[in-house]
Image (cartoon, rainbow, N blue to C red; front, side, top):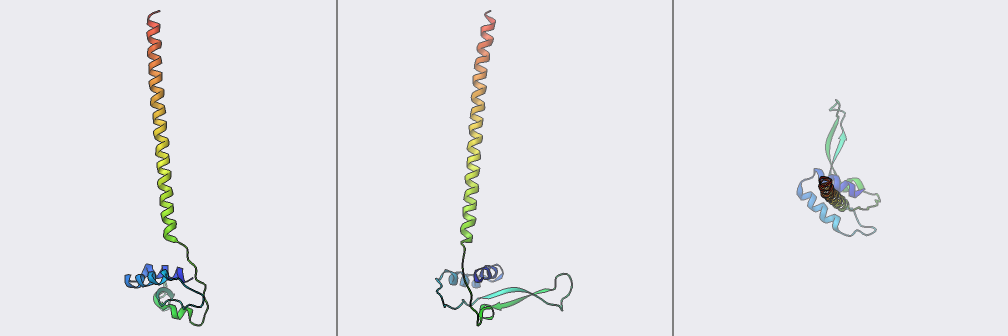
Amino acid sequence: MILSLLTTASAFAPSSVVKMATRTMAMVAKEGDMAPMVTFKCRVRDEKIGGDNPFTWKDVTSADLFKGKRAVIFALPGGMIISIFIIIIIIIIIIIMIIIIIIIIIIITIMIITSFYSNLLINSLTWI
């Protein structure tokens, strides 16, 4: 939960908060550790606004969210997944290009062989 909140916070927070959150996330957390102090920007319903989008931004600290509660923190390497996805796409593009080059070489070879044998056939027919 904290990771998704930190990710959300990094999207809306100033760069100083993001750097602090990144440094905090890089630490190894042990059982019983306190959640890092981070301020999150959250959308909160505000009935005074009315209309189609009755929400406003509110600052919520990690102390407010986790005070007196236990939380399970886990992480997935999101940046790594994107990098692997891009590498797989590049490999697929390279494989497709190699297949296209092989097909072009086969077509050119067939055209050369066909041209050679058709000229040979024409020449042999003119001697008859």
